[in-house]
Length: 489
Image 1 (cartoon, rainbow, N blue to C red):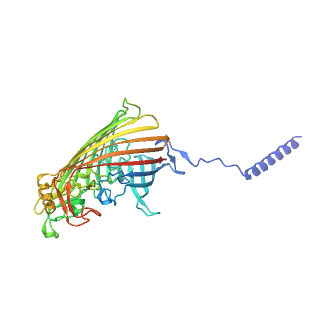
Image 2: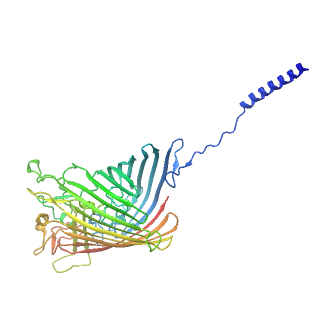
């Protein structure tokens, strides 16, 4: 009996082993894999790149702009180079632009903190471009690691709101440092806690922060007197700019104090090296600003104010897409028997010099502000304005006056000092999230200081199709407007 029992148990064990081996050979349904996983470490919109511990966020917008009496950037009609300031049949009454912006943000946690890379570019087509052509721009591209920033990023000198104190369409509200498209830099930021931070940076000033210099030994041509397009007497780039800030972020406000130093390096007095050159000078810029939030006027309302003073660093006040000269005409007719039309021209320079002399630095100061009110979640209105004062000292004024003297009408006086003030308003409607339709209107004035006028010795010297003759110095005011549709994703 025991033999029979052993035989049965042995057969059952063998059968179980065979069955198990066959089952192991059968296909088994694979466990589902989550290929895209949400990354909640850095806010909404981030996902893990599959197979890595790096989080990525893709973003951007598609935007349509139509500007009236100005450029596609919202620049008022003071740009004679683009004919908008001519006020004649060569002027464009409107300009359109379609832009697609794309940005990529990646972040990875490390023992040194978050390692971040960021890239932002625009693809755009503006009036005047070919049917299938346009422009590709790189606004921002940087690496951040252990408190350092390397690459093209917003300057640490700029306040968090920059030249956009409230909701604005235009990128030409001057009077506050505007570097939203970035400047190449090496920067370091300290975080002290409770919203307090400080940053220092070494920045490439070649294009962004350098206004031209004027050499009085090289008298400009007659046409340059109307456009400010005289030769730039700056030398090569020998030093970067050094900038820094102290910033406090709180629920009720954000405040920042910024400073920067800027090298002025001139060319030669004459056409050759033996003519000599002036010694380098150092300019500086100081800016303070505050933005008040959580105002009693309504949720999301804010008030922003900033003030800036520069000595030999003019582009810290008037920069962004704004040029180095402002000129506009009034074509409503003659202002007197001796003149054809009135016009204003204002040149922005870092410094002025002439043979044997030193660089005379230009002083510029400005205030800028705006208030934004939210009527509802869908409707928003903002008002904004700025005032800029450009001052050349007596020596610089005399050098510039000498350059203008051959073209001055008898009895005229030339004074290069000028002021610009702007005021405007924008209303925006957001019918659905991330889709905004807005309209903006701005009035700008070039307040120049000269009297009398200058003579254009040949037709076209004062601008396309402008006749030869005397033109009167006079302040110029101009309206500009912009319509925008933007879908952000």
